[in-house]
Amino acid sequence: MQNTISLKDAIKLLKNGYVLTSISNDLTYIFVFEKETIEVRTKTYRVKVSLEDFKKLYSDFNFTLIRDEDEPQENLLKDEEYYSSIQKKQ
Image (tube, rainbow, N blue to C red; front, side):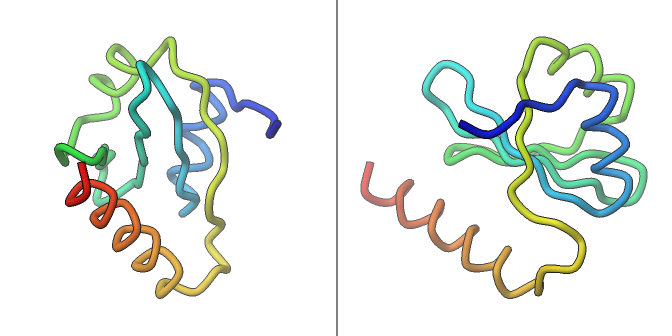
């Protein structure tokens, strides 16, 4: 099992270009920092939230690292395609 990341550390990592994930209620979340907001992605929706809203809404989540800033962008696109294909199957 991967080490979990605290909310405070998650925000630092997101601001530095890392992509994080978390699972809650059998739903996988992906978190990406974009232009002073955090985009939250699941198989059913995408939403952008402010840092303050992120702190309030996701304070009880356990985060894990899924991609670092040095990994090619195409791998993130493959991840998005994978999660999209799962959504279509369900």
